[in-house]
Image (cartoon, rainbow, N blue to C red; front, side, top):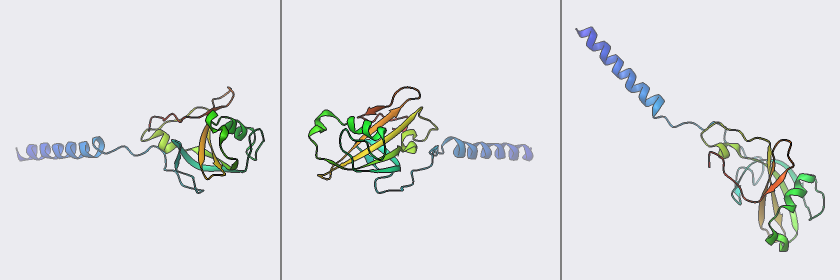
Length: 151
């Protein structure tokens, strides 16, 4: 009879440990955390979760092509209308979307390309504009960030 009690006890402890290890363990983030490669990388500007720096675009003016090309021009043209009175753009940069913050603890993906352009103005202010390029459709500027499953 004692071996039966021992077997039941071992089974109960195994289930208890398994329950604690597999059920109550918080899910790890499915993607690695952002590793900064620039001063604004892995931060948030205007609600956009900036990932790593893709390229430094330099200075830029409305209607003028920049180092980052037509995508940067499209993003600059996407600044809200109230920004038309803003000071001159003195610097711009292109960032990837921080997928770890976009996805949160679940594995996810975003279809098409998505970049974030940060414009720095002469008065020291900054403004971020997203650029969504969904597959074969034309790229479009996004003024307001829409969170993914991770918030």
